[in-house]
Length: 324
Length: 263
Image (cartoon, rainbow over the protein chains, first blue to last red):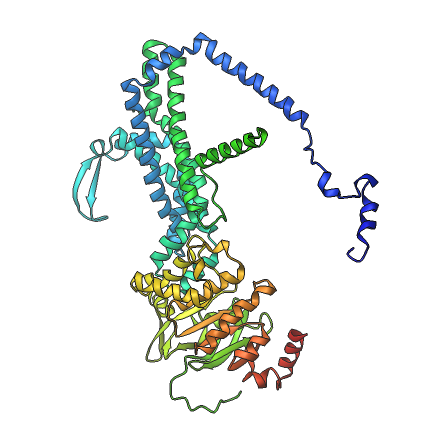
């Protein structure tokens, strides 16, 4: 190419009018997207219809929603839902991490115990597990603490030890642990073997290897799925209504059986679940961003940074359009 | 095998005797005897599958040997000798033994979630228990030595392959090792980045660091090596100074290998 005379190459490829200073005069015209515009109109109309249906239909009964949204009994129920979620996820993931480590261990007994636990607790429906814990006293009247198979030091009535709230936390956490174990295990497996080899070659102590090298890198894989699990659990707590615990879903049922306003109270619950999961999703975004350091060449901008950037480019465009 | 006319009174830095290693049915090392003196550079050459990487990894006990033993600076690696028995050491002990030996991997294996500086200071602090302030100062000096002082705050993924490997060398040196092992340190690099890593290694060799290097860089071997060891099929075929093994090989297999690598 470079050997050929330049002018000959240009005239061969472009119309004769553009032969002189071609690059300067040509203007780029972006292609049109008529279907994009059509789709925008259709979606906008559908959206307007939906909003209209929500606002104008009196059966949604928004005044009642407003009246109960911040009612003390509802707020108490939200707090209990939150407590169940936090305890469930924390205990679940701590136990899940232990199970994951057991499952990856070279010891066959530890491996199979972990496998069996995960198998059982993932296979039996949560609602059934909760009822088992709730009725634990039917199985074991008292729980005694002492030497295994030897004498007990003291014993406690199961009814006293396992209150309905304890039973709910126990049920949710043990069920969650089975899922968490697999989430954590997939995280460990995702860490490059070379990282552990390097840590071993440097002589870094085993526990430190786990905490400093393996876990932070596993978190990249664990977090998105763990976030899913957390949001699943927020809603999963509604299952404990069968134990007559006044969490959110049970509480709205109590109220609507009293006053008969089913739809607005279901809306109250729905709004609170939305609020809780939204807050958690925002938290998840920032935690994921923290663990992305080093893994990505540039971390994604936060929504605030993105907003600022778009405002800046908007102003820049305006200034260009309106010459001072 | 050549017996270098030794006036050395000190025990060898590395001493391998009758080392055997199999992976399943595949026998990778079939009786290796090798001695590396302190301050010397030994280059291991050989076709792929000849066992040179396994041999290197056996030195710091990343691979357990099946028979024979490995001594580094007079200390048995991975075992404690009681009479005629070798008792396997606990993992904690083995990890502690490794803190005297630097290892540089073909694929760098820098910790991606830690900055360059954190990569370098991690092991001296957590494995050797040295005070952070002292280690950081030394790490900055080491990064300067490999020409990367200004990259201390970067994450490894933002560096080129050559820069990453230089950080990995600094990380290995931060342990103040008696011995540094290199496992094909330039094989994963783009051709134009090989030189910068070899430069750092040449500097190290000149400064009297004891090194065992697995590489295909014949030029490096000729310039920097005191001893070149040629392996094939899990055995040492030939060893001696580069002028002998590279320029006037006695064995047919060495000649065949060199003619393939050099052309």
